[in-house]
Length: 137
Image (cartoon, rainbow, N blue to C red; front, side, top):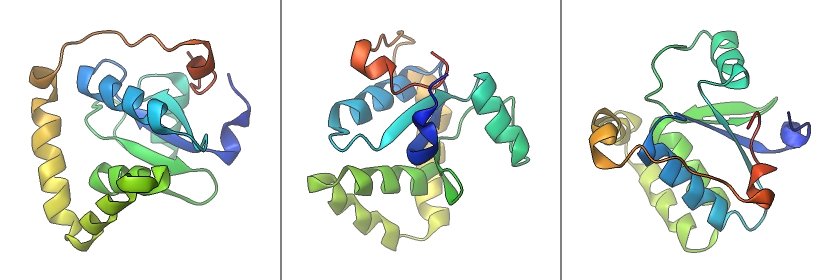
């Protein structure tokens, strides 16, 4: 397990979801400031994160963004914060924070419910540099 995760933002995702794997790869390619690390919700690390917070440990339809010792965000708020941290043009997505959470999470839930239909269940294979950004590969 990577030990440098405590100073990073951890993105928890469904490791069996093609859409989720697409977005992990998308973040990896744009993470020029090396802010992010990743862990699947199915991993021991992911399961520990969920269980310590009393969150669902069998359904993996929610993305989480965790800044250790500070906060964690879920669904649309996690996505908007990731975009904001990536900076540049992605920072413009911060306008989405003006929407009430129940509306932006409703849109998130629609995509989440249909995610298995939206993308192939292909396996993402990180390169050597990218592997260092995963907790429990």
